[in-house]
Length: 254
Length: 267
Image 1 (cartoon, rainbow over the protein chains, first blue to last red):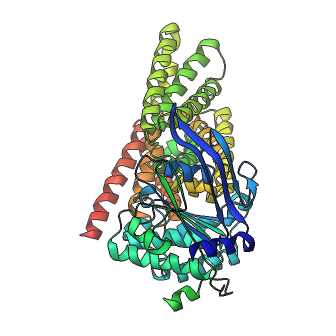
Image 2: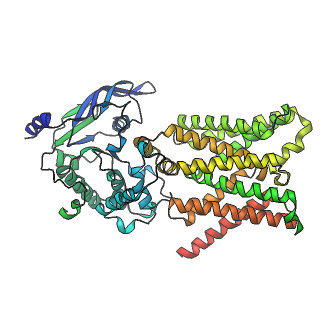
Image 3: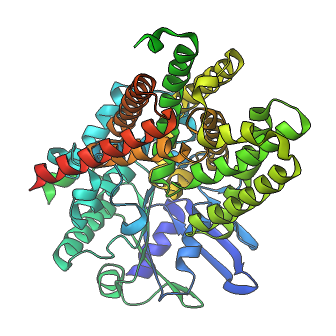
């Protein structure tokens, strides 16, 4: 069934991510060797690997934070060196990527999802603030909008970062170990939410995770590709697009 | 009381008010990026430049400024080479600055009193040129931070996210670095190299305790710095105390009060 859906995907959706023969070395040590992988629109890609297999390195190359020593990466068909449409990508960092004492409110953090290369020199206007309010509404964090980010629980912080990533309605959502350090129930809720988003929204997902059970539960037992210690699990979605561009109804169906 | 109306005191007040804007403004970004000690380091390097300026007879703050900019680039480079150990880069450059400064000191024994005024600050000797320089730096820093406020916020909050959003992270880092060097090299004439990091870090330290949002923490730190500078200069002028030291001690007193007040709140 997954084979069939992948074949169907081959002609109905374009490639979002193409990695061709990518290698990366860190101080003469090969971290990634000759990796090739591609993801299509509406794929959910789970990237699994134990520590040191280079999955974080891979992610950093995909978002342009590191350059591969060999090979090429294309986003939405464009070589990454020339890629400029960063608005199309939402990014949820690892939970401990920020300083918990940082004086920033939930609203400020969510709004920062709009700050990108095309918005430099532009003030945030009414519609930007509306987008922020919508994203917070969807993630059910409106009531904590003026709380300091460091005071929130792990699950709440996760929703804040997801809201920030979703504020631009990205075509590609990248999540870096989003459930590290979060209790089991909150993790399960979080996965349910993003699996729902995958099933019903026009988005492509790339998630790095160590949670094999969760990944296998949704993406199947067999990885589609492997490279070294990194395994790629892929599931394509063909469920009807619900056609509502804001994510508001995610709320109603859950 | 009549000191408050004297020329040199009014120049001091004007210079102090300007530094009271720029130092905490840049300070909040430095503190949040774990670069609190950069003020100290750049100040020491600036002193080396000032000493060289006296030695070759060129406007000392200008040479100090060049030294500070070069040093801040070096810090930024080292920060990348030792990711996660930002303080290491600062320690290395600091020792280099102190070494250079003492080298230049000993080369020209005659001008030591002038250099000492930069170590401890000599706000009463500010001349009109100094005021223009401080004024120009203030305009640059306020405009720079005003233009890129939201980008600097994201950069400080999460550098990776800023890069993923396609922001010119390299240029923004460079801009912060240059502005830091500008602020520090002009501030040392006022509070002195030994105390400059107080004006950069303590207002930020206070505002981290009370502010909830980023915007309010920026506003709080400028307000706190201004209170300390104006009140400190008045007190120092009237009771004939060292102005730089008075300002810093006032800042520390305000920090203690904030800490106590905060404890009172949460208890």
